[in-house]
Every structure is written in structure tokens, then in C-alpha cells.
Image 1 (cartoon, rainbow, N blue to C red):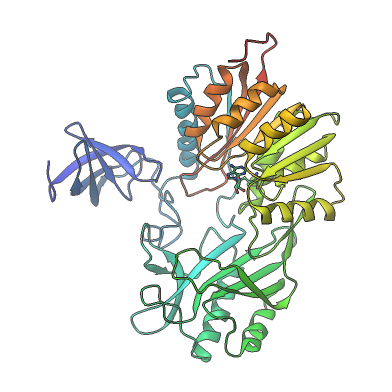
Image 2 (cartoon, protein in one colour):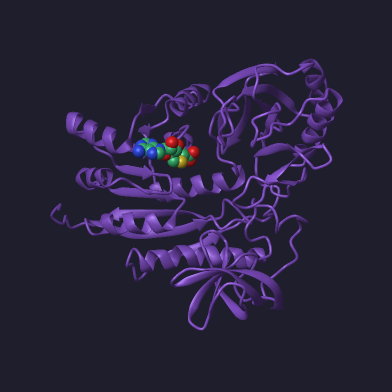
Length: 458
Ligand code: SAH
């Protein structure tokens, strides 16, 4: 098999990047834009020793789960990976991915999996959008999203994952830029001014925030921009973020408020959050609420418990749990996130939550060693790479009755669960939640319970 060969194959699976996987003559081939069940004609673009990459030429027989994507640029845009797949099939695919990682990596056999929690309406779910701004070949200002793996902007002001207000905001920003002859930033040369437009919406409050990211500290005729944006219903906060670096990191550190409040507010459950342009906030508030409700249910709090929430971010889970616990301790590595967590505790009159800045794998062992604080429940919600071994060791030593593991990567989840279950814990409940329809990502919530008989701690 070599480059430029054209062959026929059936797609059997989807990779963790959302690329179809099939086999021809026993060799694994990755074919973008295909889904499980498609039979396709594909042309080999690149061969490695044991696998290759091929380009979709023609769909011979479409998968029974193939649907027409709602978005006309679904295939070109890097934002969605599996819009061509029926939503119920997406949910089955995600649940299966979690199950197979737990079996394969975690070596679990009887997995108490509950049905995946999907969305009733799997579109328009994102409360945040970051549109890169660029120039087309005719010199017009464009906004859109990057094509997969590149920085080519696919022009699109109407993303089906975001809210309708995004398009209105972009129309006003681009009209202002064209009127005042303000050029878009060009990544290659570093020339131009406006780099990105960040838009956030409070789903419950309907408040809207716009933040322009530019490579200078002011824009010409800023009042004109403000006047245009002010007209949009719900507009609450307009700001300018300054990023002069030649980098693909979107936001700079400097922020200047142009109009309104420096933040918008929104709710998850009954907890209110203030969200500024630089703060982290879950992007799918509807599913986040379902995920946290699940974590809360798994924690089974009665009001007398001491709970640790590790990798707590802006304290979203901590504050949720604090409503039902005696005391919650949150640990997070990013200091600004902890500032947000403390402020959010205050505006909700939550007084039984305390936060620490630092690495979970350093703070927890240290506090345990010094103060011998016990925990009834430990919640972890680590980034993709999972929990540090030092942290898992400390959890094993502390012997909380329950561990609730919230995970965005079921492979590292399975790895960590195996360690905990080899040291006295039992996998009691497990459920996937679809936070990101049309993408391959899936969140999982797991309940581990300490077995009654204390095994020796290794
Ligand atoms: N639970 C939060 C955020 C989870 S995302 C929420 O639901 O909103 C994972 C978080 O872990 C991020 O905020 C990241 O900054 C933090 N983090 C990464 N490495 C860490 C470490 N070693 N110790 C503590 N926090 C860490």
C-alpha cells in the first residue's frame, strides 16, 4: 500500500480526534470526514509503518447513522467533529468509548454503567465563543473558526453550537471595523489590529459580554463600537483585551472596560457566578448542571460531611457541594480561579467553603500530614492527564468513605480508578454526560466506595 493508492474500505470506529478508522488488507487507515458504518473510497495521503492516512473521495454506502449536518461548513470547520452522525448514535458512541476504556485500560469487568445523559436539543448549547478575525482575499474583514489543525479562518458568523447573539455581535463589530478602516490582525506578519472577538452569554440571566482582543491599548473611535453594541438586547459588558504577543494564545493579560460592568452573571443550579472575560466558566451550562447534580447525588451528602474538591477551578463543584455539606475545601493551581471561587462564595453567602491555591498533589498530602484532617468525600475533576500518583496515594491513606471522580478523559480515568480499586475502593456507579454534542468529547462521573474490610494500605 502506498501514497496515492485508491481503495475501498468500511469505517469501523472513530478515533479520539473524531477521525474515521477502517482497515484495508489488515492495515489501519484514518479517514477524515467519515463515521462508523460508512463504506467509502479513499486515497492514501501518507503511509507510516503500521497505519496510514487517507482522504475521503466518495461515500459508496453511507452509514445508517449518517445525517445531513445542519451547518453548511461543518466539514471544513474544525469546531465540530461528528455533526454527520445522528445524535443518538453520537451518544451511543460516547458511552461505548467510556465503557471500553474502563474495560481495556481499567480492567474492570462488571461496570455499573447508567445510561448516558444527553441533551434534548444538542445545538445552541455554548455560552462562549471566540471568533478569530481575519481578512479575505478581497480585503474584507471576516470572522469564523479555524479549519481543523490549521489557522485558516473558515468564514462563518452563525455557529450552530453558539447562541444567536453571536452573529449580531459580529455584524456590529465588522461593520465598525470596515467603517473606521480598522484592519484585522494578521498572524503571519503580526500587522493589523483586531485579533479575536470573545462573546459570552448568561443563559439564565440573558446578559451578554463582548471582549475585543487587539494588539494595542486602544481602538480608533471606541465610542462608535460601544454605541453599536449597546443596542443589542442584554448587552452588559464591553471590554478590550490587549495581546501584543506573537502567539496563538488568544487572550492577553491586560483588560480595559469600555462600557458596562466588568463581568456578567449566570447560574448553575441555584449558585450564582460572576464571569469576566478572563475567567474560566463551563461552556455548556445546561449539561454542567446535570453533571454537578450527578456528582452531588453520588456524594450522597447529609450535611455533616467534610468534603475536598480537588482541581476545583472557580469552585463550581465546591459551591454546589457546600450547600449540602458541613465543610468543603477546594484546591486549584490557578490563583485567579481561586479569586473567582472566593468571590463567588461570598456573593452566594456560602461560608463553609475554603480554598487553597496550589497543586492538589502537594496541598492535600501536606495538610493531611500536618493537621490530619479527615475527609468523608473527596471529589476530583482533573484535566485530561488525570490525577497525579502522589495525590492518589494520599487519597488511599486518607480513606474517605467515598471518592467522586469527574473526568473529561476516560482513558486516564480508567487508569486512576484501577489504582484506587486495587487499594480498597469499589466502583459503585458510573455515568457519562454529554457536555459537548457534535464533538468526540465526553465527561464521566464515577462513584467509588471504600470497601468495608480494610485492606492493607500498600
Ligand atoms: N472543577 C472545575 C474545573 C475542572 S478543570 C469546574 O468544574 O469548573 C481542571 C482544573 O484543574 C483546572 O482549573 C486546572 O487549572 C486545574 N489544575 C490543573 N493541574 C492542577 C494541579 N496539579 N493541582 C490543582 N489544580 C490543577
